[in-house]
Amino acid sequence: MLDNLLALPRYRVLIGSLVVRELKARYRGSVLGFLWSFINPLLQLLIYWFVFSYIMPARDAYGMSPYALFLFTGILPWTWFSSSVLESSAVLIASGNLIKKILFPAEVLPIVVVVSNLVHFLLGLPILLVFLIYYGKIQLSLLAFPAVVLIQFVFTLGLCLFVSALAVHFRDVQAIIGNLMMLWFFASPVIYSYLSLSPSVQRFLNYNPMTHVLVGYHQTLFTGSIGHWPWLLFLGPVSVGVFLVGYYFFDRLRETFAEEV
Image (cartoon, rainbow, N blue to C red; front, side):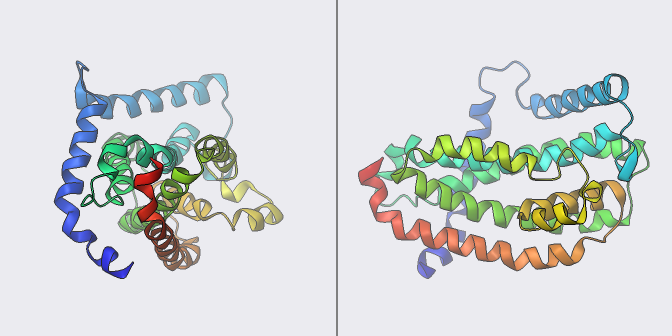
């Protein structure tokens, strides 16, 4: 496992090429192409703004005002996470022709999925930042933003390695993951504030790593506070542990992929 793990940096050119291919394929045949990476989050934010300003207003408590911007701050990283996990559950099966090539490093495929969705997340950030500046939300806490992104990247990558390997042997995983992600969404502070919950519910959600990641985004980008940083400092090594366990599981099943896909 350690030799394969240390060899990962050698595949950075291959990963970069596959990420570019994936991004081009996503918008192939589209008139506006990559512009959709900016238009989609902008339209999404405008819809949230209209709905929560005129149809369902009055969500000003617990530092969630304007609510549309609060919601968008959580939706962007959640979309990166959920899309990565869902796509990883099918990526090895869909790429059977590559898996059967002896020299092809299979772990590259879930990595490409996570990095591709990271690029989409980053492309949506300029839209978010424009509105954060407009509402005067930009504060020094923004300097800690890259650390939150790194923690989410490592955690998501470890989980995707585990899910992609498991789905090769248990095809039901794809259907289970779809329902699990919906449950996970409501168990994470995307559409509500962590501070709005009772202490007993907070204790329950503290077992959910995405709780701390999303609160980290809300604090660094939206509220400008750093009160949740002890949890993020704890989550950093936990994410590394999730990555190592995910990679170990993937490496143990690696030899069986070609027979199963």
